[in-house]
Length: 317
Image 1: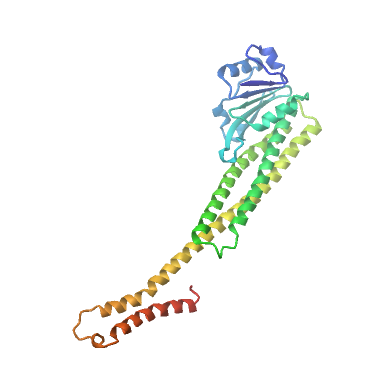
Image 2: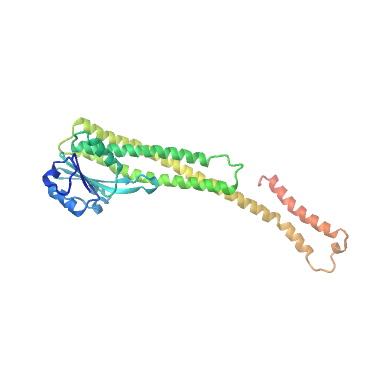
């Protein structure tokens, strides 16, 4: 789909109509749409594979007064289904061309807001960067709230809670935190490139940007740096919660093993006594005692109770 600002361009529009637009937005474009834009502007549109390059020289470059920019942006509204979508920007002082292969809410929001304003291409790109950063900030705020909820789930009074229930609760909290951490990794990946784009455009755009627009781009970079610090702090908190949940599960498992160990140790003396009296010797004094059987059973009970009491005395239970 090919969208232009301020006008929507249909298939029958010629190169002049395309070039009159300030912003051409290519959304999962067909080869025919790419060819139309290339003929109209005399440029080469980067392919999806080119936009996937991770080298800084591939993501940010200037040629013949045109800035070629690319960044992985987050696509999708459901956090569990987020993906990094390769996105390209071609900018000079007169027009902006964007290439994307997935729906991006920030672009739609900016396009709706620009329907009422007359903006230059650098201003449009600045609006897009600001909207992306605002959305990332909103996500980090929601992520912080989710982490707080997970923290309250992990650090609860579990004295009256069954072991299986506690383990399931901790496991669910770990899954929730792990998903948040995965989404934050995608946000950080976008931040790294977006901050560089803001600085690169402010320094290399031709003609030179006016002071207010440069300040806005610098502000975008500063906001990204601030959010990056917040994300780092949140990531450390997430790691702490994951370690704590893992530790609680290990403690619960150790308690089970401890109980099983005590039971097995307490069961050794009775087995020994029963084994002794189960020997088939003819001369065994207790066989002729009237109280021989109760005596043997009493020994079995005492040999079980004494080790348990000793474990409790040592605070091992």
